[in-house]
Image 1 (cartoon, rainbow, N blue to C red):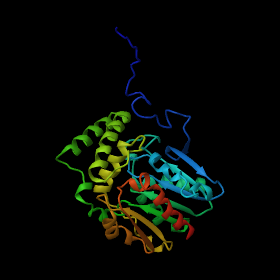
Image 2: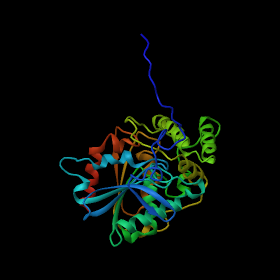
Image 3: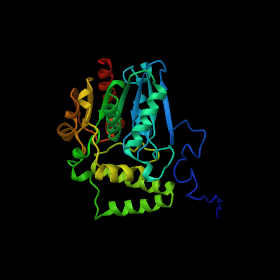
Image 4: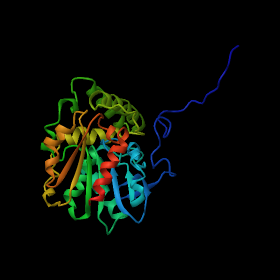
Length: 314
């Protein structure tokens, strides 16, 4: 017996076929228009509560993996007392795509400033930043110390170009190996304005990175990456730029909570040596048995317990 099936041929370059559509292609997505971009965002919890901005890693990630922070832990949830706001950076996740020259750390800060002014115009806010999200939070704190009530930084990236010179070899780009081939191929697609294919290939490469040098044991929960943002910021600006987001951190008098795991190239020992001391008042939690994203997706309850205790002390 021969079975015949019919299927519809779809163009992988069409929005939504190869990777999820952005807010530009799908108007049903929750979005906010800022000066120069349109961002995908989600808001949960108590609108009357203090605003907590949860900032994604990358650059080039999306906030989907961070939604585990909405879980209840021993009868407590962030959503009970706080309004918790997530957003995808410009060029990332389901937010609007841009040319590489518009994807900068300066624009990441500008977008966050506008979001804070929109959701909390007359209030102090709290940041929870993971990886590169810790850098974006620090950018804001360095510029607006009076607007921030507290911050939780989970294995943040480098707060200055000088600090980044100490990055471990596993976190560097191999210019003689597969890394450069992937980067050049993705750059060519971005140059053709084919962000769908570029993001697709970047997503495959990112899974390999997580497994090889970030100690990951949890399935990836990322939805759609941002290849152009990853290249423009992570490779070009972070590696070759000249920036320093520590110049006014001495004015920030609130306690900052750092949480780090050891099973990663950027683990507890590295954070303790090169990151934590940039803030004048801080504490540092050492979480064992997990990797970079595992602080959120494997050890969710444990991490939420530390965050709860921190917030109660503010």
